[in-house]
Length: 464
Ligand code: FCB
Image 1 (cartoon, helix red, strand yellow):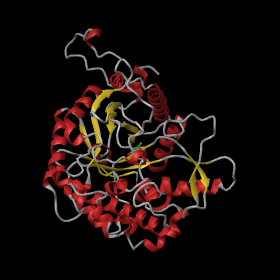
Image 2: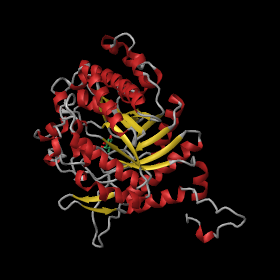
Image 3: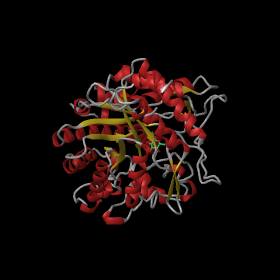
Image 4: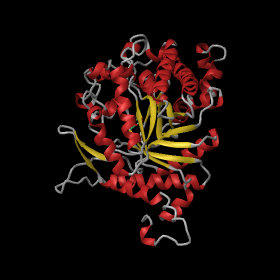
């Protein structure tokens, strides 16, 4: 597809961006009054994270954010999605507010705006204050109020400059891994706790939406859902019901109640004991867009080792995989975008898409990350095909600007457009960075011709 036809398909204000999250890049975990998060504590437990890594230093973004914004400028993105670390601004998750933590995000937001990059603020990217974790975290219904108060604080503080807010990043991922499948804190396997956590996160979403609408004029709100087609792995007929079960939890347990006002039938009965009258109405509050994260489809197995009886299996052998082992199937992205459009009818912003590859700095000082370029090219083509088929996609953000702390994989997996040499914190834009910069430039509308009878000479127009 050439640039001209691409441009014609995209809405004129299509948003190109990059995404990160607080715990994965900030570091400075003990600085300026930040309280501990559940990830600080979890990553210190032996055997939890590859190589015993933690987010203690990460990309040192807390001190290097100006350099990182410079990279975004060079890249040509006009939007940056980041998250606020709740324990940085409220060290205990409730009660006392940490002015020094709030001031960090003031500096970040102001520097973004000065660079003409719109801040997209996500309230929760998994780093729950440990003090709330100690009180049961999301299994405690009081968390709804704590989160709503935190959301109101953020809206009041930044609402004059930040208009785009997401409540939660991938609620299905942190609840399922935290309370059923393992691999994320609190790493328990308990069906009742899982159901409670799902319901309370949904209620917290609805409450935060209301508080942000009340505190921010012209606010534009959504939540960010990771949607992945759940396919039965080959080899066992029991994998089919397992795939259906996981699909209900992974893909529907949050967007269905938030956007349509009901729990999917497969879990509605189990959820009933935890619901109070009007809960669904409190959850289903009007939002402005659907934030979508997508990397790959899932291949599901039946597995008696956890309360849902599901496991994550392998893709068919002929399917290519990323360095994470995730299947690379761009057509699943097209299918997902069309499915979200048909089911929820909201404008869609793709707020994460990208891949891990085994990147290295070569002798000439460059990072030739061909697998990432191939992935991004194929997934963008799939997105354009979905737009062609009628999906209302308004923006696309690459995960991630920088290599960073990839949860249980620590620093062993690199997702960045920019290579980070962790010992020195040196940043090196990879080949994919330059590829994405060219894509953005080619899709941006050429500048309007100057007023008056004469056309601008072709050479003065932006080049594709
Ligand atoms: C998503 C997470 C993000 C990052 C990518 C690779 O599930 O939201 O933080 O880890 O995967």
